[in-house]
Length: 342
Length: 164
Image (spheres, rainbow over the protein chains, first blue to last red):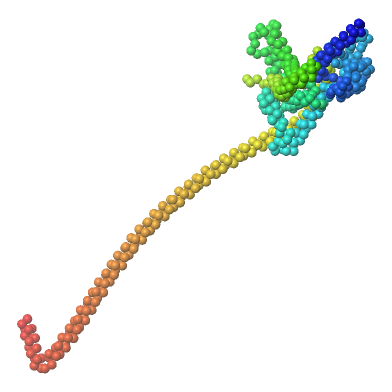
């Protein structure tokens, strides 16, 4: 009787596990991890193991993520948290039996590796293009150069020059170009499903946060007198909104921070949702597959049709989001350096 | 929660990676690319400008040529007209002169003819007179061969003279 019960509950747990698996699968796809999971053959997951680098309790701890056995084992007292606010991160048990984060965790995770690959490719591509420009001086563009030249011209003329102005845009151009192509290539590589693509780089809030922070720093540093005056003594606003309670200055000062915050969230949310929805459509096949093989094949037609449509949509979104991020950054720089015409 | 909870490590590596990309591209790629684009645009603009200028020059040249041609034609016409006038004048002059000369020649010829005629007449007259005298002499000699007749004739002459 008891054995039967355990078996039933075990079954229940198993079926529950399988249902959860889809959610976990999607989450696993879009979140960061210590290894790069490629696929699973039978019960053996195949993954690229990445180095774990921790600084905790006064010394450095470095080991391969293969030691964690896909998050099921602990190594040197560290294991991947399965729940709580630190879920997915390496934690250790403190004296009270509570999970605590190591002081610094600068492991080369999946997303970090994807960032490196992406950075490397962007550098490679643009150094080769720069070489073509040097070698083919004054001649027509060729190959990769002619593929990316329209984008370079677009960022230079329609984004930077129009938003910042003829005199000052050249100072911000290297940053805007790097930003645009870094985001664009990250977005596009994220759509490629095969390693080393497919990582959710720009759908990660840390990545978009860093870029938004750079935009924030550059905007703040290049803000001129006029920019700060507009914030703390906003023109065209009734005086009672500024004195005795500085309502407008407060709102405007908030705006300094909300602008980059919005940049961060917009890119992050767009890319993340794209990945989630795509993974969801693919997962539908397997969910229906559990009802019967026929269901799986039947649904796969519609699922694939939607997935292809979404993939194409994602390519569009990849361009749009990179464009929007850079356009808004350029607009903020333009606002910060604007000289009023009197 | 996991999704909106940025990891320190990721922030760190992203910052490092992005700064490296920014540095390398900012130093080795963007200046060359932007300079190349700018130079090409400038050379295209210059080429277009110079083409336009050349066209303008061609147009100006053509206008000049046309003007020159027109002037040359006008000059030619003027020269031709003058030549025609001169020709007419020369012909006219020559005609007048020839007429004058011809009439002068005719006049002098007439005069000469007159003189010759008068001379001839005089000569004829004198010759006729000589012949008449000769004939008269011969006749007289014949008539006055015998003395009777001489006498008769003298008498007759005397008679006639006395009658006068």
